[in-house]
Image 1: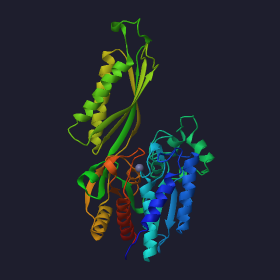
Image 2: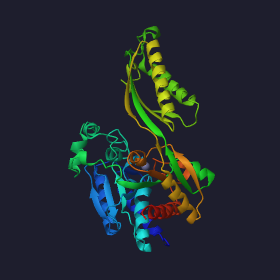
Image 3: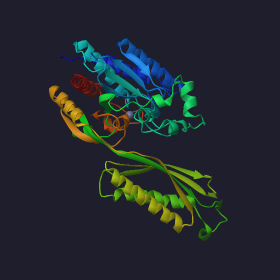
Image 4: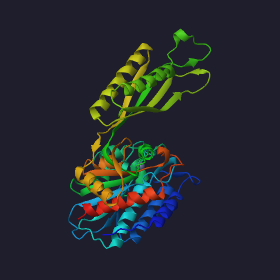
Length: 412
Ligand SMILES: [Zn+2]
């Protein structure tokens, strides 16, 4: 089998998809179930149909584009990623996995290859947590990681429920029908930009992901007492922001002293109430993101954070409460897919390294019901989630070619 990609077509498709955005180019903003997301979905479905794929959508909008294999009853080989984008994002996050998957299928079709197992290209709904506060909404439901009941409780910032929003966007089915059975996928492979600098630094064009780190996030609500910034003396204060400052450093310290480089903790949001220059902060809400490749160590760090925050809070006579938003397990890649990816790299004389994905992806959740692995390509300076995110056409094409070869091997 000799595979040729249409690299120009793929790059022009990446540009075309980037132009469907709520922001001016080169900025990409495509929030789930907004007009631009729906337009991008329609555009994507048309590309899939043009390639002869059979398209179906589930109740949360996950889209499946299937190339039927000669044995339609065999478990399918899946690939894909997401096309939603956070505000002020770039062109490549998720998109490379979806359009690369499509180009891989077209290259296989053109080579005369006929799969035994059907090959399915998935576009997952809302990998980004922008609208409903939870990332990987589509893959969580599809893998049974999030229950339909819990999903129905989700609301966007305007108070609209997920059910209202998805039905309004044209996805009226029952959420109960989204979950796929174990055994549906024979294998699932996701192509993605690295979103970190390692491949570029080491000048290695491909990364085979052997493990995806375990993410957790929580909110900390600190309640003190407000008052006039001039009139209340220091000894009488119960300043919530001063406590938050100590807590942020305690969180940093908990991650730094976990004993492993793989532990990371970030306070990304600090909401201060009332937020006036002459008013003592009475209430602060922190949003904390904690990740590790070892779930026990991650949970230990979370307990250490909770203990430290309670002690800071007690020492300052404040009330502090914790809300756990998610605490997910890590995922290991499946040896059969790592092997298929390695063989494909060798076949195409591409150097590769094995690596851990510290960002999470839809594959983390698909791993609950299927063997998965991921293939990373470099992105400039490791930049992602910003408009100057960039992956070169050569790197995209190389990753797509290795993906195509891997899908072929897995679908035999
Ligand atoms: Zn992504």
